[in-house]
Image 1 (cartoon, rainbow over the protein chains, first blue to last red):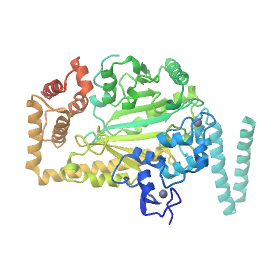
Image 2: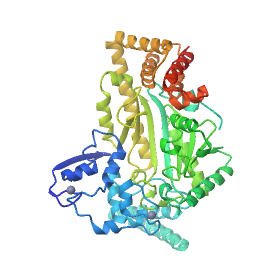
Image 3: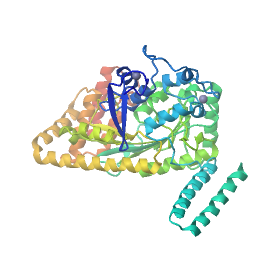
Image 4: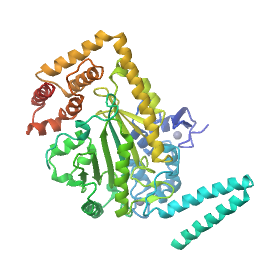
Length: 171
Length: 343
Ligand SMILES: [Zn+2]
Ligand SMILES: [Zn+2]
């Protein structure tokens, strides 16, 4: 099996991580395991170590650095992905978009999730709240159809339509 | 700034205070369209500051007093750290850092910390829900006036990806002398760290802990709702309380003489030492506290020990004395102060 981090060397370190009862299996080569700090996890409770480890981009002599990730930069604040992986801090809220897939992967590793399910700010989050409601109703509608409760499904469909119109009107 | 040594978590005992010293809720928030603190221009940081200033001016509910970090002396800044009102990183005097405090110091709002805004509520004992409800209300008030960086998928956007989502960090400080004496803390801690929670000693940066005090907090902030995060921590806390209490019972049953000996000796040294280091003092205070909770020592108010835990720390100690002290002078004054308070 190849190392998950560099996709280059044979993996020799196997790490099992349990976060929120979800088991995660990680395979690294020795160098990457050291660089990501995975070896320390479990004996050391400090979470920051884990993160800077995850992001640590100290160039390994045996690794080719992916050129596209080297050039990656946030167009809003000009922070490069490289700078981010050095100090573990993003430059602005739009970095989350510009570093797209990479951030997504990191979030899934840290939180075992990439989707916020918590509080939504009242004033600026109104649209988000409506969208979340629409998603929930759609799920309900699917279940209603599956149970052949077509009348209920129709009611839900109208409700969804109404909410979607409201979103369109607001732009 | 008024030199206030005591704040609420030191003066009062909350629920389950025989094991849980304090509960804290922290929310990380950023002003949308401005770069995060470490990457922001001076102008942007100033903007954050003035937005908060305006917010607080128009508020008459929370009544927070805004204090510029650069207006404080070095000791005053360090005392805020020792009282857990600001983080050690927040003592730098550049970068337009500020903190807004409520009268009783249960609420602190850090401005231009790692995130533009860090709301913190600190209450004595096990009061996670109470602390959350205050923080949530202040947060609502903030986002009513200030546009906060928020995205549908990732929730509240923070400078560090470990805080994104809810931006919520809930932590409790627990006192576990009995579990430590029966050598069960390490096992418990490693079990806890597998539940998505982080454990660390009170003041140490590493795993060395002082005075049997541990801080437990959630690590995961994304993918779980605020309620789930709180419930998870609360459940674990209740188990810790039960285990510590069982260990205390066991100790009294099986090692009564040695426990009593330890408690009385600790009290003896604390009330008679001429000079004492902070580590030794914390250790002995922990033993006396255990003695109080086990009913061995009866005439000391347990709140005094909470106060001592902060008062004997270097910056607070020197502020109380009103002058700079050498390490030797500090150890002498520390012993004096402890004697005075325990008498
Ligand atoms: Zn590798
Ligand atoms: Zn950016």
